[in-house]
Length: 79
Image (cartoon, rainbow, N blue to C red):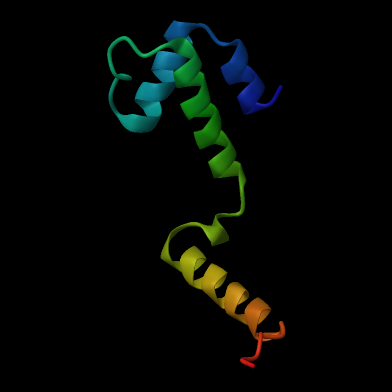
């Protein structure tokens, strides 16, 4: 069973424990279980992804890819 599947099937107490282990605090008061599940699922998926696209290095990498992509396309000319 994947981490996301575990999160989707967990009860509130388990979700709160997982939240506390990740963020070193309890979730905000009166937050619905569905929101806790979404945040924890997002975090789990983020950890599974290639982190080369995250942070300053990822931003620089994205800019470089975009520049190279735009450099190869034809630009409109003025009439």
